[in-house]
Image (cartoon, rainbow, N blue to C red; front, side, top):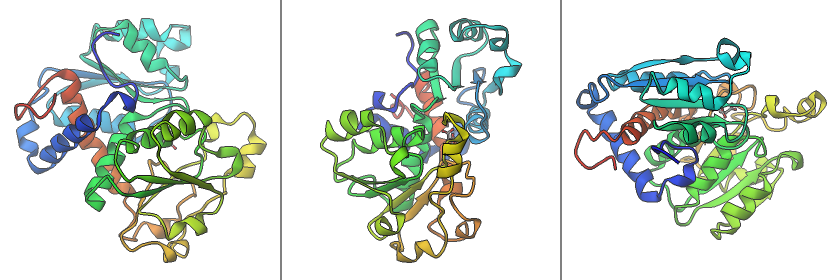
Length: 313
Ligand code: NCD
């Protein structure tokens, strides 16, 4: 492996996660101090799958650091449509940019890119596998909303099988003491075996699985809702059968703790009713903002740029 980006959230220690959050909070407090930090630097956003937040968040993060952006937002507009490999595309882009953020439908594609270039590659979501920078947004949101990342009961609800954001979140939260999970999903969309054995069991993290959101609600400090990942289903009939499994409404929130927070990586389809948006516990749009600040902190880290001396290792 060459110059290190971020492929899997497991690459970051709890201290490194804390450092990134410290930098992000300093950026929030003192944005002007960072306005030229990446002057002359370029990020390439290579998105082979649709995205609104993640791509624009990376791009606005780099712009707010004084850098510039280039890239593509669909596979059909890039040479992959002519048959180019990820490795060749990455080697080409390395000639133009200082850091790559890549989203790809195939698990492992950003890792392949990282193996072929000497600039950092950041995984912006690879198939049903991982989404480490969404997790950075999630962590900062939980910290800012609840004041801590330890001793929390986290409910993950929806498509826990294909939902890559859940896989990364579970991995990261397993680093904090006193964290417990309640996984709420239909049987067909349970959290994958490899996450249960390699992350939860290996680290001795307690968890329960249930099909009932109502039963879990009152126990939760965080409710992490997810979209049923239509694009990863093998047949339409299964998707149609499972897509409306959970719909969060103000009524269902009645038994939730007053300080519980609802997170969602977005986009939502119908799994959170828009009537929930005005509830102070609905944190998903604040989560989007936090994502930009964490991506700013991450870009500084992978480029080895320290603004305040020592914060970004
Ligand atoms: C998520 C993703 O792409 O995995 N979106 C995002 O990046 N915020 C979640 C999803 O698409 O459902």
